[in-house]
Length: 267
Image (cartoon, rainbow, N blue to C red; front, top):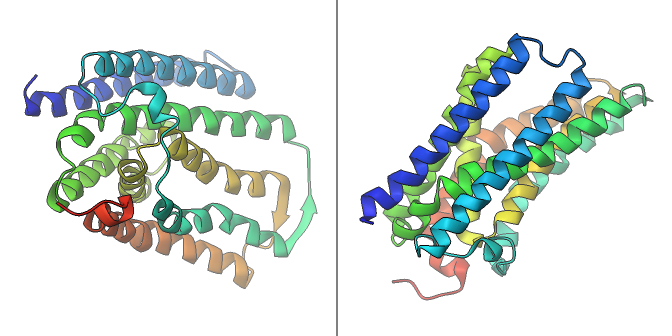
């Protein structure tokens, strides 16, 4: 397989899988297949797991044909370079930031605990599905053939970020605002793509994705807090700064200093 086809084939496959997944979700929602919200969430979880397993089979095929950097098992067990933990500091702060709002909490409720538990499970299923889609599959050829130089790495994380961002545009069908979601997901996707490229560890980015999507839901679901309080406003501003400035800048820095962060001499 030539280099261009090796890069574009998994991108096209990822786009097709995403299209099928979204088509099923739209049918479920608009035909009200699952009138009970919790049942809809459970069905979504199952579908994400099933699609994820399909992609694992596809990735295994790439590996057997020598068309991927690592066997599938290695993607879940690769040793994470020490410096990766340093560049992860921004996303770790992003994950724990919602808990600072609890300094203004005035109520704790368990009225929606069942739904919240299902939602959190869904976020981990989302991390499993979306990281297999957007990182492991979509970036398969890019990681193998377009990550040798600084320019190639920047192009790779930009392409991966753009794919991740644009994949959220159809969420307008579910009542979300793509003008807000697409840019932030694009920049966030750049960062996660850079982390994946640096760590070669799919499990790591799956967990980062799941926890990033979970902590604010836990805070909003279990607590009432003063939204207008200075600390809550500061958290919102800090997360926006992370989304639109810090994470994409760190992604580019990872591309530039990749070899040093990997602990190997530059080419």
